[in-house]
Length: 357
Image (cartoon, helix red, strand yellow):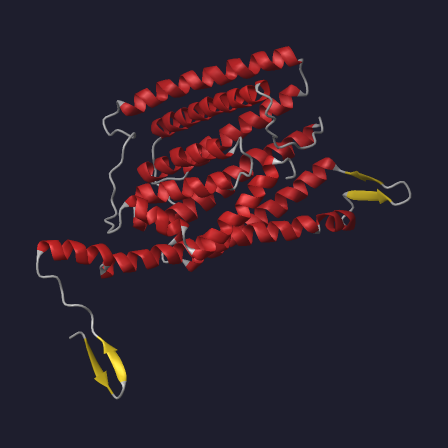
């Protein structure tokens, strides 16, 4: 028997171990091994930490945003005429102020996550020497992929308009001054390249690599995608996250990804500034010529990288994990705090799709 009575209590004994190969297969189908159990727990713990960090990032940004008008009035970047109900503001100063809030709310939660983990900062933020030639090829290849995704996004928007589906795009005010353009480039190109690569390809990807490089790349790209809030941006951000995560794993350096991220955003900021200073026809001509030129260069660089002696197009899985990849992804996504993060970001994506954000 598998149980005994002791002073009226029933003591549980585990079932007898399987005696045949078929029994062994049936046994492990329903009773996970200690290694599987421990790996699941480790993935869930890390998922909860990452989910809490992402929720904290959004929470602090929301708090600062709610009180931003008060801060702007306090420091003189906004003035209100209470009699007429109108207000005036310094757009350059407001953009700079938003940049500071974004930096603080993004940097410190992920810095805390990095400090709370078992990995050293040097492992989470690798900057191994890659070489100028390889870095240039990787960056140009990455920018070419960005251009390809831009073309596909543009086609999707055009098809949507033809069939009567309006897809809202992120809009922001514009001021045609040198100071605003400089601040805008810092806000849209430099800071996101540094902070988002630090967070997603650095802290998140680095902390997950012990569960497999492929797993770390997929999860970091997925989280990178959902933080962009707009339907038109999420697929592009996810694919770019896969590309830049792959490059980090292959080169063990964040630098190529930072440069790809910067040049992609810089291209968008530059094209936006150009659209306010030239005719629409000339703008469209320059946009498509530049886009397809960079796409062609990117394709040539991808071909060059694929033919190199140490091909940068594939990488071996270094971590030995008990659970298969699909199971690891499912365990990560089903952790309690991560589900809460998905709900929060899902609401933000819905609001973005409705044009509220």
